[in-house]
Image (cartoon, rainbow, N blue to C red; front, side, top):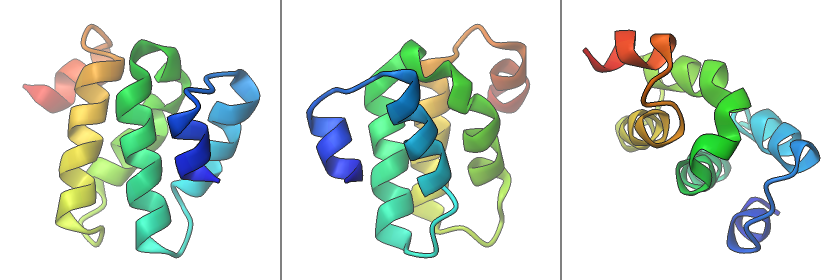
Length: 88
């Protein structure tokens, strides 16, 4: 479902809400695909910034997923104060 939403470029509030829930899925591949989906969405996924910050700061998360979360944050909210604090 995550890949389908990403490939279809569905960026509705409902789709973003579903994807936000997927960030806490127990399956690593689901979390990874979700972060990648947000990265592709860019600024339209700004609601997910707090969730992506949690992923990025989670020391127990897969390192690749954390790095992709950082890239997603840069794509989504390069001017957001929360994102700027992380990037600097």
